[in-house]
Amino acid sequence: MSPRPRGFDLDTALDAAMTTFWEKGYAATSAQDLVESTGLGRGSLYNTFDSKYGLFQAALKRYDTKQTTRLVELLEEGEGPARDRIRTVLMSVVEEETAEHPAHRGCLVVNSAMELAGRDARVTQYVRDTFDRMVDALTVCVEQGVRDGSLREVGEPRGQALYLLNSMYGLRVLGKVSDREALAALVDRVLPPG
Image (cartoon, rainbow, N blue to C red; front, side):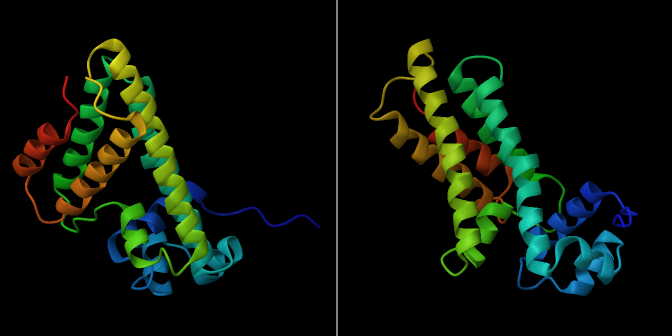
C-alpha cells in the first residue's frame, strides 16, 4: 500500500513555518502558531515533519535555500567588480532589514544562533555550516577583488571575509533598531578599500 499523497504544497507550508519561527523564535512558537500560519492541521504537520523540532530543521534548510544561497550567488555570479558585489550583498541586507516589516525579524540564522547554538548540536552545526559557506564565498570574492583591482590587499583574504561576515550579521542585528540611512552609512565604513 503506497502512502497517501500530500494534500498541500510543501514549499508553501515551509515558507509559512519559516516566517513564524523567524518572527517568534523556536521556543516561543507554539504548535498552534504553526497550525495557524501554515493552514495545516496538527496531524498533517506531525505526519510530515515528525515534530516541531523536525519542522524547525526543515524551515532552517528552507531559509538556507532562499536566503543564504541568494547572497552566495550575488557574490559568485553578480555583475561588476568584486567590491561592487560585496557592496550589493551588504546593501541587500540593509534593504531587507529596513523594509516595511513590523516584526524587524533580523536573520533566522543569527536568531537561531543566539537562541539555540551551544545548547543544540544540530542548530550549532547548521549555523557553523551557514557561516562557513558565507565566509568561503566572501573569501573568493575578496581574492577576486585584489586580482581585478577593485580591492586593495589588506591582510589575509579569509580574515577580511570574516570581518565582512561579522559586519553583515551586525547589520542584521542593528536592522532591528536602526534606520536605512544609518545602516547604509555603515556599509560604506566596512567595505574594504578600493
